Length: 61
Image (cartoon, rainbow, N blue to C red; front, side):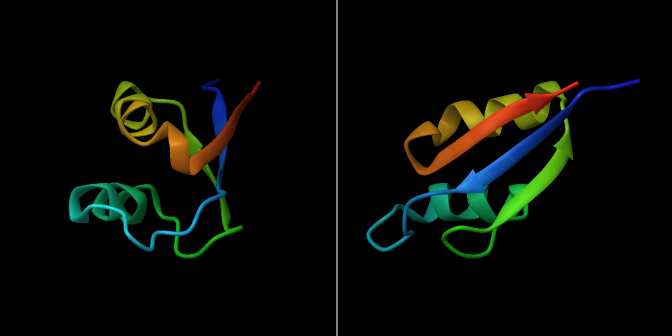
């Protein structure tokens, strides 16, 4: 069974670069305070590493 990651967008996207906005949308987040759960994959970890200042996330086993 794979681990899951719960991700919450904690900062506004106002003034954020286009690439970082696209990364947020790629994760599936839409607005501040929105939370999603995704499978823990290397691709997702790379996205999280790109924009850690916008997110709060935790691994759920």
